[in-house]
Length: 394
Image (cartoon, rainbow, N blue to C red; front, side, top):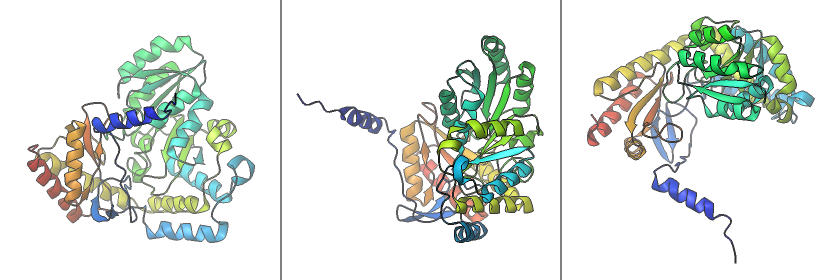
């Protein structure tokens, strides 16, 4: 008898289709900007994480071109053998200065940064205290470490305290890890109160600032700057693919920790170094942020206008405190219907459902950027109002 070894895939795909959870991957046909060509149609872009509008910035593109001419297209080696270029070291120095930390390490992505940082810090004899809504990359990094994972309730320092007090005595050491800005709800971790809890018990601290860099703090210096915790938080994780507009991840913090991670981080030791073009473009982004906070201010102005107008229209925008504005709809089928109608109206804003968010918490996630002008935002608001009324939601 012939056994269909791929039958499980057909069954899983059918289940995803039946539950409205099958991901529809659209194709971008132009650079990330306020307006994009998507699946052959010019639409207003509310989807990308291009917070400061740098992904198509002429200064970053010129820096990338110049780096290719000087350095070629790739290092062709891992950082620990023959892949560390002076460009990498310059970017690490500049990022450390920008974030006001002792040292920084540039890796291939924000996802890789969490996989690189967590396993060297904790192992099978240790415990991680992790926010219930932490990003998948944090969850995967914790699992790779082999440490016991204890989940505390979302943004709840009191529960974190209780969990640490109960479980820490059973392990060699502990690590408290949280997202800074939570990517689906747009809320901000109470980092100052979590720091007090961690200090009380002597556990290591780590924050993933992927959606805070370029957004929070003085001129976009991130959540640690926002709370004034310089030199206190042990490790900051960041990404250069969102507000910085390029690609790559950063691990930043105390020099002793960075030196140790360079010896132990598997993505750093066993995966090829980032390209000269990407590294140079990241350097150009740091230049722009250090020179002016104009783009950060415009981002927040746009966010306040859009969120206030959406609430005035009657939409539920959840608990967002940042440029991430969720439009809460509940059921994934409704969210997909809403997203499709928006696209037909010329607005690209994707539906987000389970497992990215909990069951019954589906939403349209709007990503505000400094690339948008007031006319763009009004166009988007008009489309949301039209679709919301057509679906009897407002």
